[in-house]
Amino acid sequence: DAKTTQPTSMDCAEGRAANLPCNHSTISGNEYVYWYRQIHSQGPQYIIHGLKNNETNEMASLIITEDRKSSTLILPHATLRDTAVYYCIVRPINDYKLSFGAGTTVTVRA
Amino acid sequence: DAGVIQSPRHEVTEMGQEVTLRCKPISGHDYLFWYRQTMMRGLELLIYFNNNVPIDDSGMPEDRFSAKMPNASFSTLKIQPSEPRDSAVYFCASSSQLAGERADTQYFGPGTRLTVL
Image 1 (tube, rainbow over the protein chains, first blue to last red):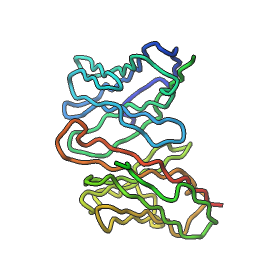
Image 2: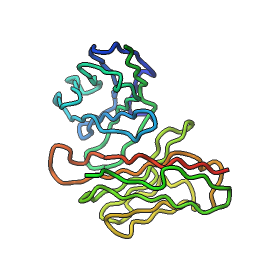
Image 3: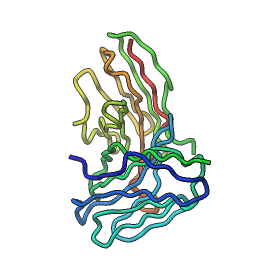
Image 4: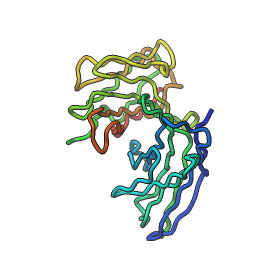
């Protein structure tokens, strides 16, 4: 019972913004949206998370729709090193487990 | 900070042998997680600890798997006896409940690639 739906793969041009969509139509009010990524042969890496408001950090921006049923991760200037599998995860506030789905394989092309 | 440290990075063993994977969490973190990643099943949570106490082991596949955390800076995942289907990459992660920007975010180690022949 996947809580999130993501496209299987997407390509992005180097230097351009990458917009990664995620649907989480059954999200409840006490669940965060988390994004992690996994570069080949490495452990997953935290990117960003949010509850209701849009968030921005040094890596990315997270845009959450007003109804919270979907979100978009934005990598503002994609580089070749951003090629990875990106996971969108919904996680209850009081539960520390992360359930990883299949994610989106993002390939940044020169 | 050195990050989460796992050893060994690669392990090749024969079916029936005991395998022990080790993890050193980030200093000061009070949560520790063990995950397994395979092509077929993706990344699965096996067990997690809080303050060295196992909280949820519902992801442990069977009795052949056991995990311990004798102190705040060390954890082991043991498989006895090992089987070919246990071949996977095993990740350890840690997190902290201290308030702050990255509160409760999991930091992953580099993983141990296990091959059981």
